[in-house]
Image (cartoon, rainbow, N blue to C red; front, side, top):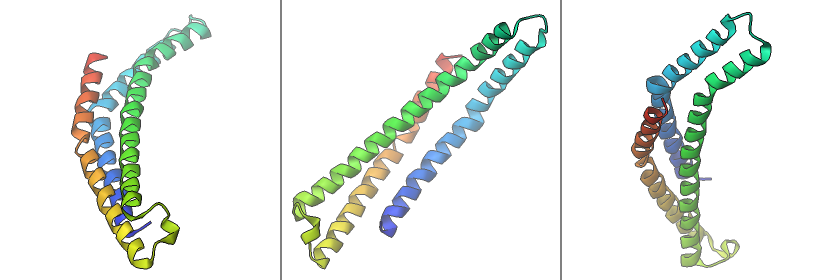
Length: 146
C-alpha cells in the first residue's frame, strides 16, 4: 500500500475518531452516568432477590445497548459505503488499463496506482463530508430515546 493510501486511511480514521470522541464527551457520558446511577440504585435494596436486582440492572443498561447498536449501525454503514466506493475505483482502473494487472508494465502499474489513490482519496473526502449528517442523525436518535 502506498503512502497516499495510508494517508487517506489515516485521514478517515482521524475524522471518525473526532466524531466518536465528540459524541462521547457531549452526549454518551451523560447517558452512561445515568445508567451507572440507575444500576447503583438497583443494588441499594438488600431485601430484593438477586434475580430482581439483575433484571433491574439489565433494564438500566437497555438504553446504552440501543445507543451502542445505533453507533455500530451508522459506522458500519459508512464503512460499507466507503468500501464499495473504493472497489468501484479499482474496477474503473481495471476497465481503463485491462483486466489483468499482472501483465501491466511498470509505467502502467504506476499510473494505475496513482489513479486508484486519487479516486480512493475522493471517496474518503466524500464520506468524511457525511460525518456531520451521521452526527445529526445520531443526536436526533439520542434525543428521541431518552
